[in-house]
Length: 270
Length: 288
Ligand SMILES: Nc1ncnc2c1ncn2[C@@H]1O[C@H](COP(=O)(O)OP(=O)(O)O)[C@@H](O)[C@H]1O
Ligand SMILES: [Mg+2]
Image (cartoon, rainbow over all chains, first blue to last red; front, side, top):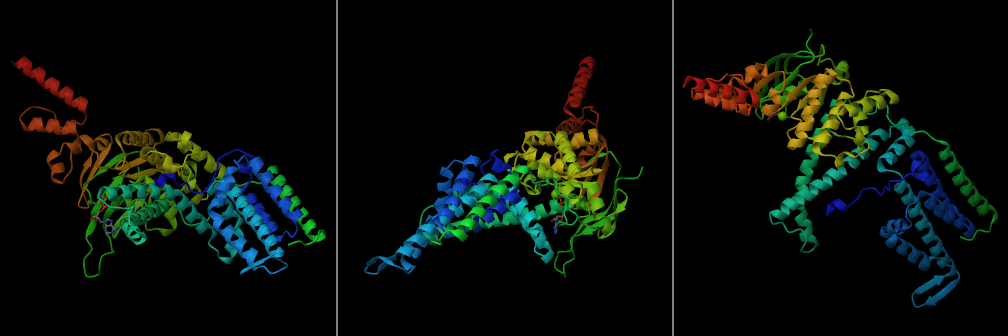
């Protein structure tokens, strides 16, 4: 049952987006998000939406994945929409009992909803087209300058790698322990919240014990393979920017440029 | 020839016991020389100190008394630590808990990355090592998609990529099914034959030990027997008294000998046993 959980949302493929350098993808995604939150005009927002549609089209990720990635954030979207709708002051549209909806409120709500949807869809595209490990690699290399201020970049990325490595192992183990406890008559599925939480204790304790033992052995194995942090460490896989990264950057910068121009010259709507 | 691994009067006690209690001695005055190219099996029941000894050959543990030399380097020389670990690689029992990376080839590259080997050289050695253990086709798999035997072979590849002089395997087959055990053992034997790597195999499977060139039996932190398998396994009573078995063929021959049948005392493998019994039956036949 637990095996169905997939970690990360990577969608293996061979599209141009899959092949881009992870560093470039991360940077472009950040650029895109900043752009989303600085647009002040429907035209600019339209450019942002078109850009996203275009990106999804060339990534060959099925569009239904967008709805799937949006599902968990629907409550947040509804909440912000309602908040904006009812609490932004302006020219009243509806004024009934305690409900006051202004024209500005409605507009902000709509724009905010579109922004959040684009934000989620955009970042999901990054994780759909980049394997978690490549993403970790890209992040480590991007954040390298932070080492100068003693930010533990390498350590964090190592932790991330080990977590990714051991999540499937631990999930499998949890499954085994659950079955073992069920075989001993443990009831994991009925009862109230408190009872169910209590039923988790005999699962979590063996899991923790085993995780610590694993950590111990892994540390030993790493030591035996001459691990000493990132002192003098090289990497087998080097990251290289290719012409495709250049094109992707150019397209994105063009888009952002257009939005900036629209922001400056078109009337500020929101 | 200078031994590749050498323990001189090594004693060891774990010092994580409470102060008043005297820590129990785990290794008791062990001296052992292992020559380049040897295939040594180390036998001993649980808790006899095999793993503790193995960790001395990698400078994970340092002797309380005595000295350990790896490839001529004293393991107490801290600034040669990585030379030592590169000379004597180590493979552990649990295949799951020694793979670090999420992709097979990245795991094999791990040690080389730590040692600062240039990328192209890493690539070459990783491919070479994966081919040597027969896991090259799986280079882009993630470890949890592999069987236990395959994971253990990847772990071995990760060590031989360092091009060690010697490899110490601590019960590498203990958690595997018979198929995985066969694969791994075959790989281990290849290490000695094809690559000339010195192999120290800690095991509690007698048939694995029978295939080695030299068997060292450890009991209570002491080496009690050391020699070629035929010679070591001929001490059936002694082995049984320290809680160890002997290979099945040896045991059968021993039991028959106990009953007064005239069988040689250095039988190791089934075929030898069959032949010896056949010969005995023929003689029996002739004499009647
Ligand atoms: N980390 C440790 N701390 C304290 N005692 C230990 C530790 N590891 C092993 N021992 C003890 O040392 C003895 C030998 O253990 P070990 O070398 O693991 O034996 P083997 O591998 O032959 O089963 C055992 O009695 C064990 O309890
Ligand atoms: Mg052991």
